[in-house]
Picture 1 (spheres, rainbow, N blue to C red):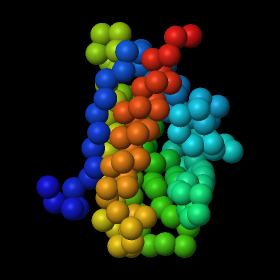
Picture 2: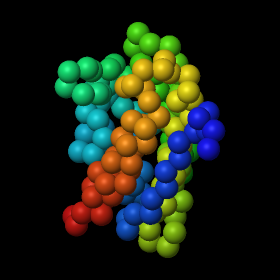
Picture 3: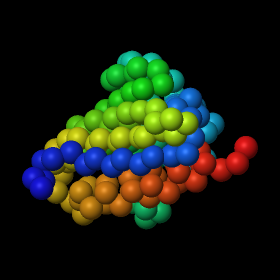
Length: 143
C-alpha cells in the first residue's frame, strides 16, 4: 500500500440508512459517538470546528462540507488550525436490505506535517474505533 493511498474502512450496521444518516448528520446524535460539535448542518459550504486529540495536546479541527447527497453521501474537508495539510473525509451509505453499509474514506493524510500526532496509524486507529465500535454500538442499540 502506498502511503498516499486514502484510508478506507467499511462496516455494515444492522440499522436502516435513515438511522445511520441521522447519526452522522445530527449534532445531538453525533456527540454520542463522534465529537461534540456546537453546530452542524449537512449543507455544502457549512463550516464547523471541533477539538480533538489527547488531553495533553488538543487540535482544533477546521472542517467545511464539500458534498451532500441526503441519505447517501456526506463529505467534508478536514484541516488543523496552525498546521499545513488538507484532507477530505467522505461517508457513503448503501442500503443492503434492512442494513446499511457505510464506507468511510479519508484522503489527503499525507499532506499533514510528519509528526506523530498526524501519523496514518493514528487515523486508522481513530476511525476504526469510531466507525467499527462507537457508531456501530450507537445505531444498533435498541430504541
